[in-house]
Amino acid sequence: MSKFKITLIVFMCFLVLTSSAHRRMRHLYYDGMLRTGLHIGVQGSLNSTWILNQNNYNTLNLFYIPIVRQSEMDYVFTWGGQIGGEIGYNFAKRFGIEFHPSFSWAGQTYDDNFVGPVAAIANPNTATGQPQYIPDPSVHANPVDPNNPNPYFVGTYKYVNVRREVKFNYLQFPLYAKYQTHIGDIANYYLMIGPQINYRESASENIWVNHWQYKYPNELSPDQKFQKIDYGITLNTGVDIYATDWMYFNVGLVTFVAINDLNGEALKNLDWYSKNDVDYQKSRNFYMGIHAGLHFYITPKKD
Image (tube, rainbow, N blue to C red; front, side, top):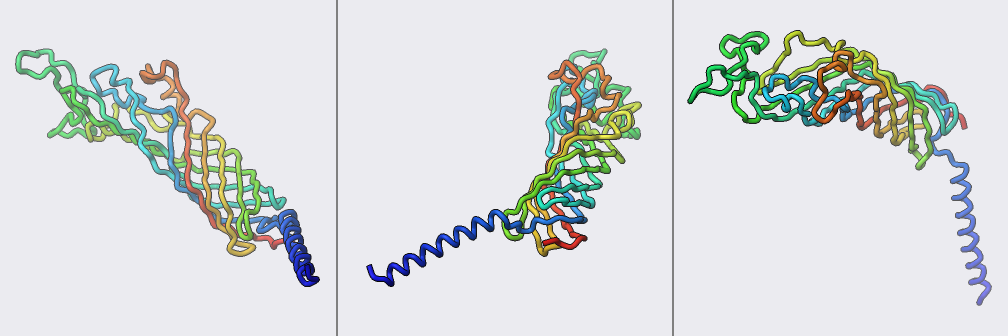
């Protein structure tokens, strides 16, 4: 073998070894966009919201057949979300804390069809050719419509639609512990977990029977039905992408599950719960969604 070929082989081996060593050293010491400091920003999420273990709660009381009144309703996919600010501090390049005060909207929609009769009583004067059920005179629309005093009435065993919508507005206060690691020159992967407290600003419940909105006599207030304070655990994971060394945006997934019982005392003391539950079941808020934000460091980057 000529001296030239030997020299070329040695040179190529040297390049391979030095390149491998450089990559290893870069992997050990390169921090990418990891940095310490104080940052602020705006953030929000689009969520799928649920109320776990809450369902009928006397919504079907107008139905004549007892087992129907104790039925559970189908859950409907319900949108919610939150929008607010963010302030955080990275006390180390991989560890920090973040606080996300936000305004949020949550709740749950239920929709199902059940067998009638509805808003009916047995006809005491039933004879051949007469209906078996007649409108219940104690049931009427609110406000009263003289042309259609009982729009909920169905005197047969056909299916009747029922819809229930529960809506909440909260001020929410999640506090995160954050871990992050770089996944490239301009991006960091992050994982955040922590407690969250929600303060309910408003609540509403609307029910439709036979496609007519229905209000129960002596209807309970939202404060009687639902707790004012909600608290639980929140998890947030995703990617921080840096446009500059002081500005970045994040995209990820966020979820929250409440620990405390959402129901107020009025919903805990019903005569029955459902035909599938012989004991009282606690209800909890839950959501999962796509989270995004824009953030700015207000302290200079340290080398």
